[in-house]
Amino acid sequence: MYQHIDFTSASVETTVRQVAQFVAVTDRNPAGAPINVAFVEDIPITERLSAIDALSAADLQVRPIISARRIISESQLVELIQGITNETEIDQLLVVGGDPIQPAGPYTTALELIGSTPIVESAVKLIGLPGFPKEHPTTSVEVLLNHLVEKFEAITAPGRQVELTTQVCLDPAAVHAWISRVRARGVTAPIRIGIPAPTTAAKLLRFCQLCKVDARLEDLYRYGWVADASATLAAPAAFLNLLSQLLQPGDGPISTHVYPMGDVPAALAWWSSIQD
Image (tube, rainbow, N blue to C red; front, side, top):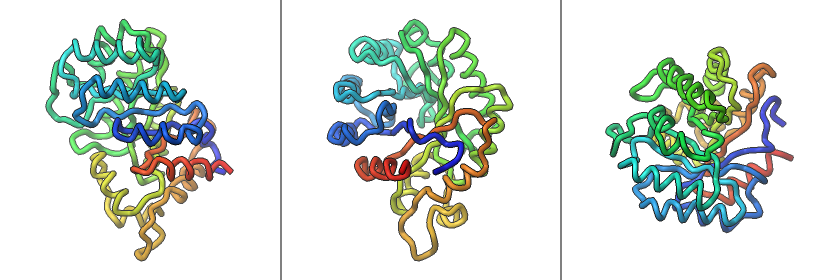
């Protein structure tokens, strides 16, 4: 349906608290799709590992997210990495800096976490990284891109694989421009475009705010997420249509990452419908 975008291998996002929703609809999860388990709540490591284990036990592919600035100590990181790789035999992670401005422990950046002994010596084969098509409130796109290149090189140097997943961005032209810049810098990793599933306009704006993405109601109109002033549903069809027109074969492998927006069954049903 959408040229140059692969919808056969979407990944999906969850929080620890939403894990039960995924387990309840195991048969509707995309086959082989990684489920990224966010690291955004103040939840004990044991509870986090239990949630990851529940997904793994349901034969779902799990990709835990680890937030550098939320790790309180190296021993906690060791407990988390060993629990993920030894108990569940998961060999993929997604490493982020994290929302907190001040680190809770010894790791300030994702690059420090990537170079830490517990991760370097682990059995992890693939490390996912976030991509930011637009400015973060405290960092420009150019600086973020420089950091991305550093992390890509640090991961691939010892032979590990990398995959990128973009932060939500409502503007398809900005997403494509970012992809072009990433490829121009020699980053060849597959890219997943972060896409919020259909939801209300109010929920989408709140989600953007949580992700520290500047978005206003007029942006939803401008980029076609909302049809007109009387509409309450925000859907990604127009975004995907324009992005698919902008993408070229030289942009490399492009797939999708779905943010369920709090309703896992509805998000999975939508994802299934756009493949028909």
